[in-house]
Length: 185
Image (cartoon, rainbow, N blue to C red; front, side, top):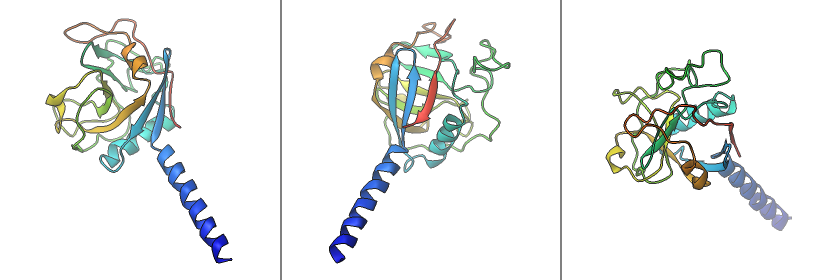
């Protein structure tokens, strides 16, 4: 009986650990393929919570990559003006909006802004992140401890690299690529 209880406890802990780990893996579907992203709730709990909340409610589905600078980053996440499925969609305003939720306080971490890092986009105010985020295409150490990094691409970075690039100065993208869907694994 004691052996049975031990095996049950071992099995239960393995199942719950795997379920918990999978809940921090997100699948970003692009027209080029699937991108698997690991989130770091222990580093930036509020940013991860917001990202998951907006993802699971479908708010990111159809949102364009409005600012993409080759060799730097791909920015998206404006659920107000950047959602191509919404009546509020306005490409010229994409990048100026967010969600109806309050802005987030900065959660600067020790996560380096290397290739594949997921980080919160914001204005000059460090506490102005809301829904927008970016994925680093290359290392950007000048962003370390200045922006709230909260995840990393595990698989599919080659698909992120294929996202249509914008103007070399502003990053503005005419006829931009968009998120097909963004959900937890």
